[in-house]
Image 1 (tube, rainbow, N blue to C red):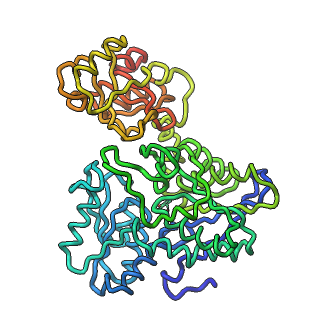
Image 2 (image 1 turned 135 degrees about the horizontal axis):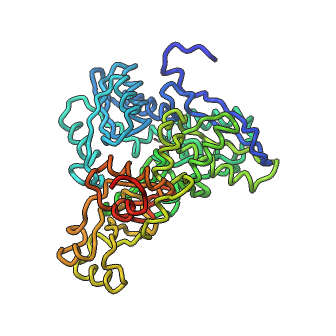
Image 3 (image 1 turned 90 degrees about the vertical axis):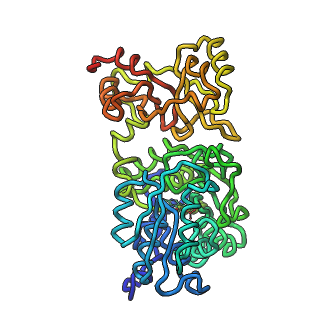
Length: 455
Ligand SMILES: Cc1ncc(COP(=O)(O)O)c(C=O)c1O
């Protein structure tokens, strides 16, 4: 059917598209969810949650739709709230991209920017601020996609049946990322039931995500995986996630996900987003181990159009260590990463550094996690310090100085020195990123000595 009487009816019914250039033996289909009106898989959950709230009376005419999100669920909710005549208020972090902000505002959403980098339970967290707003606003309803059964239910009702029907029951493996878990839980549940348990459900997961056993450290790919705030007391998983339907996880690094979508854009002509890269990398790895009898379906949550300034942008790749320039690069003059935990006593940390012969070197002060982060993301770094500063301080946290400057290991030194000075004219120590992880530190003196850039 290609005629719809409203935008709400146009959700779902996304196609299966076969990949033709992989050279692998199974049939591999992708399901591009950017064919939905709001441009992502989250349209399905957004409308389903709105309809369920209307049915239960939680949302009534004149009501306000509220959600905490930096991404696609907010766009879906804003779009369908507009369509259904509700006010929408989206609480999000000020670090979200301009394009995403503009999209939300285009659908009439009111944006409330919350900046605090604190765990969910903290009174200043996005979640706490939104809950206070809902409590004090008559008619307000919090969608809460993480714990809302209408989220996975959308996929039991639509995504699963579509894949089963369009593959004519031939699907043997379904690969999807796990954010709230709505997509994989609902689709997986339907496919398991339809196939009497035969379809294998694979959770494609960012390598650091705690779902697949990672330490919960941040990553660049948005939407997929589970990040644990370094200061959180516990790692709470969403109720939308049904662990019983997932047969196996396949961990994928940011670098693999990015390389995969760039390759698929150039070979297949399919422009997919970052979490799609996690799903594609896992799906292709799986398909390489299967034969002609298999049909692999890989769900692609959103399009690459929202990521043209990041994963598809060479300068961004360079600045985050995903690409290397020819010639003298930053990585060659950076000191290997040396770290101490934020709660370490200053004097003992200083003594240890001096004993290790690193009394003069900058060290990174890390937020501490239950599972140690051997390979930190820049969000794991609370600052930098030195033995001299530590000797004077109570704890490493007291001795930490901010690190606003991040350089790519593969950036040429001259350009990097210029870029660092434009980010912070007074910078002293920069984090050096290799494939998106902090793998070293470089002092301004060392970098400028090693370049002919103006000092
Ligand atoms: C880009 C992107 N990828 C993946 C997901 C994960 O989907 P789900 O929350 O259904 O697990 C989301 C969810 O917000 C998303 O926005």
